[in-house]
Image (cartoon, rainbow, N blue to C red; front, side, top):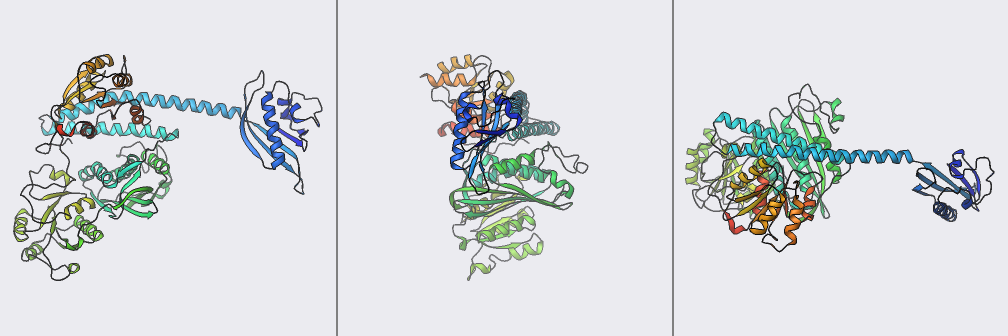
Length: 638
């Protein structure tokens, strides 16, 4: 509908479609004032508003555009996009206005149908996720508990494969849920301060074992000058990087993977370039445009044995853009690929990620050849430390053992003996024993595979794990002087043993009997005394009569749900009014953590229960004096 009005806002002419609002098809409407133009069925308030807008355009000569809903008696609502523009002559004088009313009712209806469909899809996915996670909690939890019992090698391998398959299925479920959020433009970011060292260590903990099991070398090249503490959504950053590294492991049959992080400071921000380089199969030129498409997998003939949903890179790209970054890649088919996450992060603490306290006093002996020692040498160069390298050959060892100190030009004159020594498996224990005798004031570290070291008994030297983190190397180098004992001085990269607690009681509430048993048995591993309740009413009765150190409460229960249980406990002056309450639930869609916190709970553990997450919750919410330091490292579940 197009209406033309003169400078007095009298109707001049219009399109045929205007009859829908005027309803005077055979009447001459020329020079009729705008307020009297429309039929009586049209809402009078709308007519007044349109009159004001036309007068404003006539005065300012500036067009206006807006969406509006027009009420016409006896007809459905008319949804319209309205544009009112000044009508100028050749000399620039305003002669009136032009008003276009575009009916977008069908578009609005289609949009509403799409929104309803999206809501239905989200509800379906949320329900299916909950229903799948509940039995998955039993499968994964019972398998992990079974792995702690005496098993032969065949049985242990079966259990390992069950746990691995369960984790793969959980990953697929999470990918589908994340893609659903992205599809509905519901990505939620939770920026907060985080430690870059901790983020890198967690990522390596996830990837290192996969790479070593496949025989791949994983190297880290991290700029030690990058600020140590940043502000961002570290969970989403970790998700993108883990996806990039997991793809590199999956698509690299042999060789190495290098995880590189460089940073450029910009005012209160740092621009991070986090790249993953592999020696894998590469990507054909004709397939590269499909890389970030949902449900797309490239070169299926070559990669037919590799499992995946084809969602990982699509999700990673969307997350990177939501965080203000982007992902780029370069590939040479049959040789290598490099994926890079370019990401700005706010700086919380400008202190560098790693630095030596007295670099001029550090003299490092790198003993044992290979790419891993070359990687360590690059780290020492970045840190400004003097070093010398010796291979594992008999000639090199004989040459080394014949001299207690070897000149290092950067350290000046006279040369000092080595302060630190890092050696690999290639060096025998006999040679190391002799070297310890010669270099009495030197501190030694063994660079080991995490797979091999986990089965070794107590070691007299510090253990640094592959892949070597510059932060862990720095911690080792900042220690000086003679070894304090013959026992192992393990670095922070060792796998932490499961903590034990004394005099701790917990109430676990879940309407599923198997899930109740899984959580109970898992808590028993920590020395926690557990009371169980199979419903909300039973839980409230127990909470009114007994004091607990921590409560684990399921969300969706048939009688009284977990939210109502929490609200009841918090609203009465009972023995557990201030007891930590942890949501124990399979309802993990749409970032439910904030929902549970707002409901009065203190923390959140999703199903299937992850033992690392359970350990974090117990250590965070139980009194420190009730933690018993374990005597030895627990055997790890494959």
